[in-house]
Image (cartoon, rainbow, N blue to C red):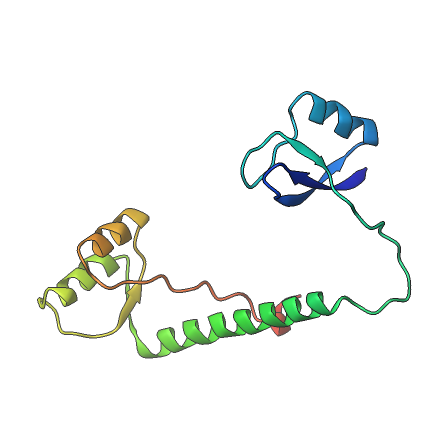
Length: 144
């Protein structure tokens, strides 16, 4: 397998794997290689550095990305923990409860629960303030 850096006529850059160099040429010639961003079939090989292993230090950008991912995952866990500790869980009655609170039919309180995408869309269309609770990724110390 060969990995190629590719570029479309709209300057989108992406990577793709091919069985051989001739596979890319054949597929590109038949219009089968498509930009995943814009759908353009005008795709060519871009300049790519060879993947050579050595004793180089890790890419600082990947270190930053890994740290940012860790920070974001921790924040998602904290948000979920805060909501679960301080809000009332209403389960699958969330849409009805949120609407009743918004319309003054129920006591104002912070709630969380489940709703279908259609229910969420209707709540938002009707001006009921709702937002999705981020899924809390597993705690890395508890993953095997």
